[in-house]
Length: 70
Image (cartoon, rainbow, N blue to C red):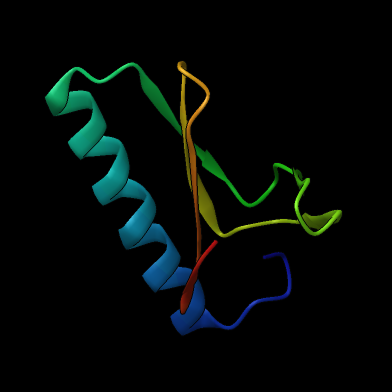
């Protein structure tokens, strides 16, 4: 997201902090990660850098890219 637009950065920041706060409040065994983390999707053999993602410690990953959920 290093060359992203201002509005994109604001939306990303809001989503990231909302997810992080919700996870912390729920006590879930998850962490919220930023777009700096590379993710390999085996099904399509592709690499993506989602805007944010939630990584569960039980091997479930939810990837968020503004406009899409992988």
